[in-house]
Each structure stands twice: as C-alpha cells, then as structure tokens.
Length: 511
Image (cartoon, rainbow, N blue to C red; front, side, top):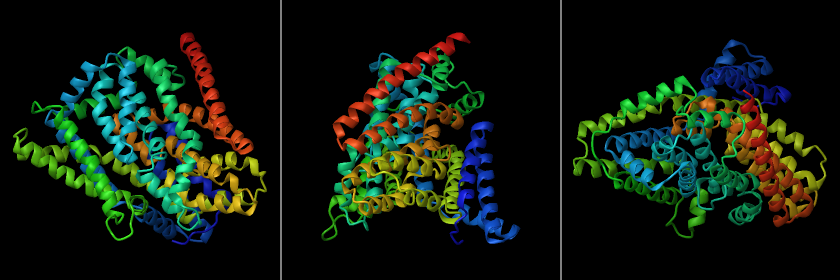
C-alpha cells in the first residue's frame, strides 16, 4: 500500500478506537472499528471502493505482524505456567510473603523487581506479574495497582537503561544524524523527566498511599477483599488459578533459576544477534544493532528447554504434565495476541497508509516556534503520536531526525539533547497510557487485570506526571540547567499528589 497524506483525517482512526475503548470498556471491537475506519479513509482518499478497503485492512493486519514477539510471548506464557505447576511461583510467593510485612513492602518489592528487569519491557511486564501476584494479593493490593506498577517500571525504566532493547532502538534511529547515538542517549537521561518522575511517583505512592482518581476506588475496594472490582476479571483469575494447578512442591529456586537463566539468555542473545564478537563490534554497538524481538525469542526458547531439563530430571513434573502446562500457558496468552495484532494494525494504518506521523511532524516543522519552547512542544507532539499509534519506537523513528534537524536549522544546538529527552519522554508517556500500546496490554495481562480497568486507572497518574514533565521542559528550555529543571518538576509532582489525593478522598467520603 502507498503512503498518502490525508491531513486531519489521519488522526481520526486512533481517536475513534481509543474513544470507543474507554466508552464501551471493550478493547477488541474498538480496535477493529478503528482499523476499519482507517482503511475506509485510505480507500476514499485514493478513490477506491470496497476492494480497496479490504486490501487495506488485510495489509494492516499482516504488514507488522511480529512472529518473533508472538513466539517469545507464547514461550513466556508457557514458562510461567510450568513454573507455577511445579510449585516455584507458590514457593516464592510464600517466601516473599513471610519477609514482607505490609502493603508498602509489597509495592516497593514489586517496584524493585520491575526496575531490576530493565533489559526489555515485554519481559518485565509478564515476569513481574507472574512473580508478584501472590504477594500483592496477600496484602490486598488491587490488580489495577499491580498493573500500574508493572507498566510504570517497564518502558520508563527501559528508556533510561543504557543496556536495554530501548536504548538500542534509540541509538539505531540516530545512525544518520551525525551524532554519537549512545553518547547522546546517556546525556539525555537526566532530562528524561517523564521516566524519572514516574519512578519517583511509584515510590511515593507505595510509601504514602496518596491514591486518587479511579485507582483510589480500586484500592479502597481491595482493602475490603475485592482485588478486581470487575466480575469478568475475577472470573478469569479464578479460571486461570484452576487451570494452573500446582502439582509439585517446588522450591524458591525453581522460580529464581529459570528467571535468572532467561535474563542471561536474553542478554546473550541480544549481543549475538547484534554481532558482538565480530571484529570491531563493541558491546554497545551490538546492543544498538540487535533485533530485540528476535533475541528475546532465542532467549525464551533456550530457557524453556533448560527448564524442561531442570524439572524433568528432578521429577518435579512428568513429561505429559510439562507439555500440558506449555499448552495452557500458550492458551492464556491468546487474548494478548489478538489485541497486539489489532494494535499493530492500527500502527500500520497510521504510519504507513494515512500519514498520521507525517501530518503531525509537518505541523511542528512549519510552526516557527520560539527555540525555548521546542522541548515542551516536542514532548506534547511525541506524546500525541505515541498515544495515537500505540508505539514509542515508531515515534522515535519519526521524530528524532526531525528534532535534530530543527535544532540545527534554527541554531539551537544547545537544545538538541533536551529536545531528544523530550522526544523520548513524550513517546513513553503516550505509549504508557495508550489502550492500544503493547506494553499496556502486556501489563494488564501480566497482572491479571481487566485491560480497561488498567487503562482508566493509569491515565490520571500518567497525566499527572506528564503535566509536571511539561512544566519541567518549559523550565529546561529557558534555563538549560538540569538541576533547576529537576527541582521544579519534582516539587510540582509532590504538591500535585498531595492536592489530588485530598480532592479524591473528599469525593470518596461524600459517596
């Protein structure tokens, strides 16, 4: 299909899909309608009929389908199921519950695990959820809060971790800009306000319980024993628990060893796929050149084989039980596969067919904006693009070359790193709260939380951090000083949390 410029119409499909998802609480049908609306806009713009609509829809469904990612998620689902069947998850949950003494400890432990798994956000989402669900359930932490912690320690952590699939993605998009990609990425970390403030917010919320918005209601219900506040999600969790029956008295090591092996295997696979070991290829270059989804699939495949040998040799499970666990684990990931496929389709329509990214980026390039306002403006544009397309990486690819060229054209090279940070921060914000984002989908899947419950409770939190980040980028544009920028942004966040919690508490008390 040929990329065309449809102007303002290019932003309608994501708006339709996201609006319907929030109104109907049903994400699959909303994405289907969004994809179809994009195909109709494309067909009408090129003068085609029903055949063009069908061709466009089929192209969107198949063009970006990532077989390696689906394979990785399927194996990870299988790994989670067999570890649970062997008793590893229960043993770890029992051990962690004996060490953790309250809700604060459970939330901080979950956050810490999310930060430690910084290699890739997909790996983070499913692993943290599987490991920490028993612990957070014990201390009556809502699944919506668990999903938020998982999501908030996925992309926001990966985007400031130099050794991660995200760093590799950013570096690869800077290959033709004339800048050293890894050096620029490292310099941009302190200014990545959305990531820094999100991590700070998790810690503050875990310690103080300054909840607000829908999350406050979910947490209030959870303290009374209702972890879901959604009958469908509760039934799905009960079904999952009954299907993933513990048939062996495994040990903590039966969870920890496979996960550590998976981390090492994925890192090794990223280096291997990136060409590490070849003459002249450094570790940073290998991470920059790697294909994350291919490497993760390799790492997961090696890990499931390792786990098979580990469990079968010790007779924790039989061959038939292991394979039954694999089947159930893969089956549990099917809803995520469907949503991911539709989300990828929406991204294809916006990026490769109707030109959403071209329309928005052209608006920025032709805006004649004051140089000092560029970082804040870029943050907003990146957030909109990422939210609409459901992808941070796609937004990186569109905006990074543009913002570097803009800064050079107006003679504001000293704003290049700040503007790069704003691009990364805005992209992560949009991806963080978009219902069609793959990490948002996987966070709700990993937490066993209804997807729309996760989205609706997370958006107020993400928006709060985004508003504080926006002010911070305004300060950064005028001061070019990272210390002043961070002090203002952090102070504003802490004040906002206190005020929003007070308002929310009054509303809950009035009901």
